[in-house]
Amino acid sequence: MTYAGLFIVAFFLGSIPFGVLVSRAFYNRDIRKSGSGNIGAMNALRSLGKRGAVAVLLLDAAKGVIPAALVVHFFGLEAGAIVAAAAILGHCFSPWLKFKGGKGVATSLGALFALCWPAGVVAVLGWLAGALTTTYSSVGSILAHLVAPFALWYFTRNPWLTGYGVLAALLILYTHRENIARLRNGQEQGISFLRRNGRGS
Image (cartoon, rainbow, N blue to C red):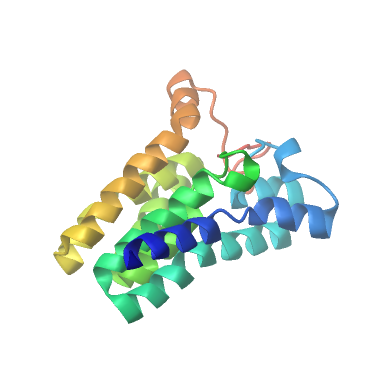
């Protein structure tokens, strides 16, 4: 019952669509109606500018790091892994957006840092390697989450944390399925500040 309650709370915290809230409250627009239509930080960069993108990035990451860190402290790693999974699922399938949402990258990476910060560093390095060498945020996001389960296992040997890494990787692959199709067709465009007129993910 405790784990179920923690899951529900973390899911609804994760479901808060900060991209929509920031764009409406401070920019008088709906981020879903500009750029790629995604509610995450990369589309915020295109639609709202640097400050808006940073705000969305930090708020989305906080949805993962804060509940996971608190639960790990009070209930342990097993509960932390469950809460981390709930937060990213809430972000990707927000009930406030008719069970649609973002792609889960910032929230997932935030949770990863709360569960095992060295694995979080490895994942961020994976994102940088993928994004900077290709100019595609989607490639960076996918690569970060493909290396995350291995990093979690290497640093912790904990099956629950590694299981979270596997779940997050599968979910990121799912939320980036359209990006993967565009990459295969040569239609994916790059990050705006790395490649002019880029759309990113």
